[in-house]
Structure formats: structure tokens, C-alpha cells
Image 1 (cartoon, rainbow, N blue to C red):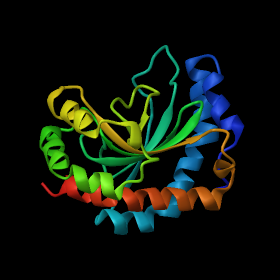
Image 2 (image 1 turned 30 degrees about the vertical axis):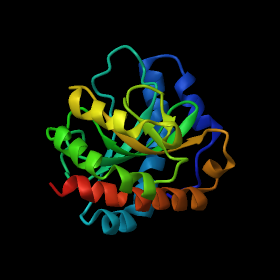
Image 3 (image 1 turned 180 degrees about the vertical axis):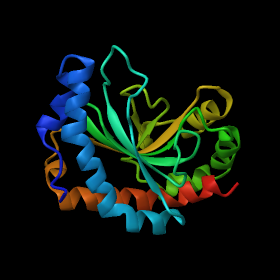
Length: 206
């Protein structure tokens, strides 16, 4: 299916009561769009990542009562799973779309990656625009602008705290007209991956 962007209806999915009802809406409204985005970007994604990247779509399989407050797709070199590896994410909360390069707590070598990023901190600040965001917990709808973030402190936490995480990328408000323009959003996702690809490749070069 052609990708035509996201509508307000997609974001209102997270207002639907009930686990089964919300999951059905996620599967019908949002997941097909995740697949379409991947088809549009995978060629560029593979080149920028320097390896074949596979699509993973969140199943929310562990949930038995509470419906998910967000949903996402992930791009990872590993076919079987993404949580233990550096990966890219495109997903939605009820108020924004996110495009992350994600390093979450299940990474087995996250302290090594954090140390490498601490050594490259000046390069990160120089290569990543200040209007990008940093998140230290993928399970919370919280992020700060890079320009307002103590990057050193965030990376130290990522290194030392067992559940510490580090996500860097873009947040686009649900009301932004960009999200309704499929072509422009695809270009934005590609541009974001291109900006973050050197950081991804650095994390994989350990």
C-alpha cells in the first residue's frame, strides 16, 4: 500500500478503551503504515546502516490488561529481535511521532557503547542538530531537546545505571501537517536516519 502519512485518527487510537479494542485498532490503522514506511526507506536504510536491516513491529504480546500507550516499528540487523541491539525506531504516542536511534537497557554491551559515545561527545554535538531530542527511558513519554540536554550526564547514566537507556532522534507533534504528507514524512525519516547513521555505525564497531 502507498504511504500517505498519518491522520489524527491514528493518534486517537490511544484513547480507545480496552486492550483488545485498542490492539485491533493498532493492527488495522497503524501497523500497515509501519510496513509501508519500511518498504519506502529500506534501500536507503540498508546503505546508511552498512548492513541489511530487518523490520520488527511491536506486538505488545506481554500485555494482558492495560492497553499500550504507544506503539512502534524497529529496524535492526538481527532478524530475530532488536531489543539487544542498537536499532532505529519509528513509532507513535498519542501526541507525537518519534524517529529514534535507540539503545535500550537490554543491550549486553551498553556500557562499552556509552564509553565510546562519551569519547565522541564533541562529534555528536557537532553532527546532530540541536532540535533533535534525547530520551533516557523509552517507556516514558519524556524527552528533552539536545540543546537543553546535559549530554555528558545522560551518557554517564546510560553507562552506569542497569536500566539506563539512550535514545536520540526526532519528535514530530501530532498536529504538524508534515505527518499528513507521506512523501515529506518519508524524506524526513530518511534524513533523520542519515544524520544518525554515523552514530549507529560507531555503536556497531565494537
